[in-house]
Amino acid sequence: MKKKTGLSHIHMCVDRILTGEQKLRAMQLSIKENQKNQPVHKRLPGVSNHPMKMALETGKMWAKGRKLKICFLDGSKIQKQKVKDHATQWLKYANVKFDFNAARTKSDIRISFKADPGSWSYIGTDNLGIPKNEPTMNFGWLDDDTDDREYNRVVVHEFGHALGCIHEHQNPRGGIKWNEAKVYQYFAGPPNYWSKQDTYSNVIEKYSINQLNASTFDKKSIMLYSFPGELIVGGKPTLMNYTLSTRDRSFIKKMYPA
Image 1 (tube, helix red, strand yellow):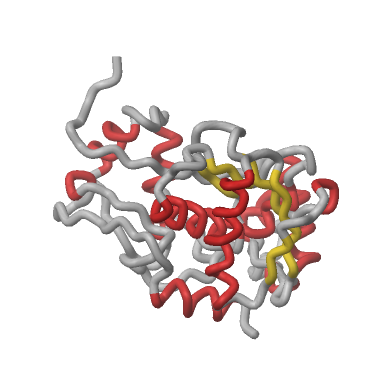
Image 2: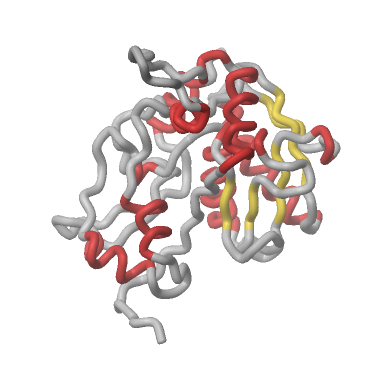
């Protein structure tokens, strides 16, 4: 039986991690997509550049002006329309386009509402490493009658991942200092039931600074979840953010300039 912590539950999305051949394929396609994704590091004498090492340092940004081809694998008319309505908020600031009428075989992003109970997305060009018959984004708790504010929070967050944005609490440029014992205890319980490794990968671990063009930590970012103060050294909770912050808008505009 899982031990209860007495804290309010956090419904979080999880990082979708590529491994093996998928990681290598995504790396190759990412560099082909945008030369700025090329790993930047010095080659030392006698040290080989192993492909998997390069994959860890490869960027994930789409080419600016890119039309991302998107298809729905399932879902009702209401679910699909709500996703379209909220996702386009990014287009006010990012020089990309969304085509929601793409054929599955030609798609870059494939959306499901039924893949599993969670919500998640692959990050940026990692989507290119996924077979065409599999979803790259899922909205497991969004139904026809889900509150519109929650739709906005979740859809904008997941499309942020699809454009290359990271979880803000894993920002390598500062951020949260965790009470790790309580973090592991909390996420071992409902609704996540994560292993210690899952919790480390999705909460505590920071992204590589070489891989991401991260801005300084933004407490108002749509990419940040609301964490109880009990999980944080100092006891100050983070906010539940429902809209793009000023820094979200400026950051994505910088990544995909007009």
